[in-house]
Image 1 (cartoon, one colour):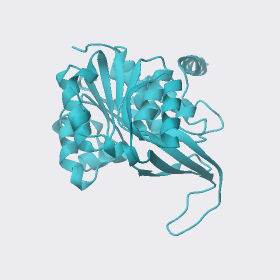
Image 2 (cartoon, rainbow, N blue to C red):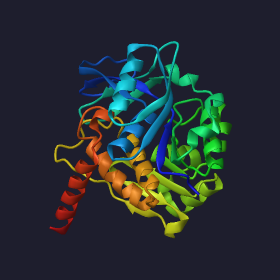
Image 3 (cartoon, rainbow, N blue to C red):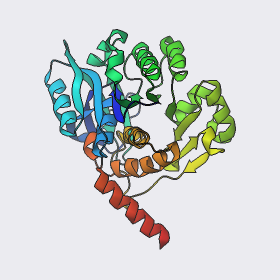
Length: 319
């Protein structure tokens, strides 16, 4: 049984160094850019902010450096209503992400771990998870630490939600496989799903569900970008397709952090007692809203904005 409805996001905080350009450069090519900005980011920080903006109680566990970026991250996340008591400041620099965004809103990202690498298994203690309903994890910190957190939370009766991103290298493959064995809900995009299964899951979603179950996870959401998402859950009886939503005629401005908005929303619905299909449906709206504004955390809607978008979509579908 879960001991509470608190969400813990355990993992990365990064400063997003973002520049916009007409198109992303080819290898060896230089292209002109514009609108450079330094914004708060990192998958775990993003997921925490997304959930908090929807009204969830959220605590973030991570590490930042003793630099200006670290203070920026703490201030931004705390301002969104996230508890940052367990974010450590460590010697050195905060993690950074170098992000290029093209005219279509698509992005290219390179991450330097910085302080995120200081997240070690010894930091994981059972008392951290008291009153917690959902533990939200990603792979932007050492995989051994992710595994320790998942095992400890699972033993405490906490639901473990894993965003399997970014895909781990060969050196971390065994630990990543072990994390899947203690994961309750898995979120992956179509490329990550293909890496895990070794084939295109869209060819047969029922077969893909069996493949994920062989890896140790029964409840899975595979996001498909403009194609929406697919929910795989034995409780549903069959794969369920969730359509993507378009909430702006102008299209996507910036897709940075859209996947994190999706993950944070799923965490918030599950922590509130909702089922996985309802979580994916709500997350489709939140992630669609997030791409209409630049940046990651700065683009995330609050509960009122989501309610207005849902009402508008309902009116349009009934017209």
